[in-house]
Length: 373
Image 1 (cartoon, rainbow, N blue to C red):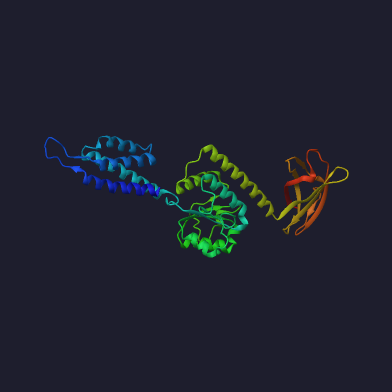
Image 2 (cartoon, helix red, strand yellow):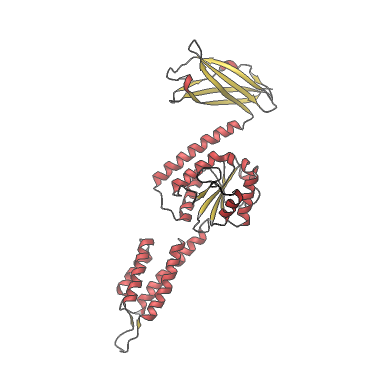
């Protein structure tokens, strides 16, 4: 976009100079002054090529074409119309720059400021940026925790990061509790503020807007990583800011929804892992009777004793076959005391003979703990 603005500016300056050199004043009262010449025709052709490339369906392009048909050998009014069109388009481009959320600059690179503990979320974000059209290399994205986007071997860490802030970068701050507990992240936040770099705050699903502090302006528009509508807006801003090609709507929606599904899976896992009360599957095996033994680990990191209104378990083998059950024998008068970590073994018959316990791949557990007393 910045190139287009400069092209238009140069065409306006060049056009006025060409006009002065190719203006013919008539000495006959019966004939009007006119502009003609090979240089004038070349200038008009250059303008037409640039307008067709950058504003093919714009009504002002049509207006320029109409004036150009009569311009060579015609009077000054045709020239004034063409110059007026170029000036109007230039002002339109400048105005779109001012209203862009990223100030309309053509950024050189995206710098992702994040905690390495949030690496999995950031990897999905980079995949989404690639889907938007950002190239898959270190020239366009810097991310310290992902190979290929991180600091090259042999480079000094702080010198390399400092060099990034000397470029025309857009900083994406991926905010979380981990981010605020990281000194390097806070340093990057401070560098963003000191160097007045444009930034966009993106919150992980379990991080709240009320937790934003430090150099990040809480009044500046931020969004949660799992917000579908804001992702649409974010995509538009990335495309406009980097001059990328538009994405087919159906393709974008498929990529976005795949991203949201993966973010939801990470979010659900983290919410469970960060819970004070958990039940984990430690081992799955088949005994000599063909029954399935599951070693469960009950964990209460809080102080309050709890009992379970619900406990359901889903086991999946590597082919996706499912075994689902509820160990009801644990629910009757079963109390997990504060700061208790207890192992239990439950036995269940294989109700789905397609499920292979020797090839168990993953598990899901739903619990509903309540205060015991």
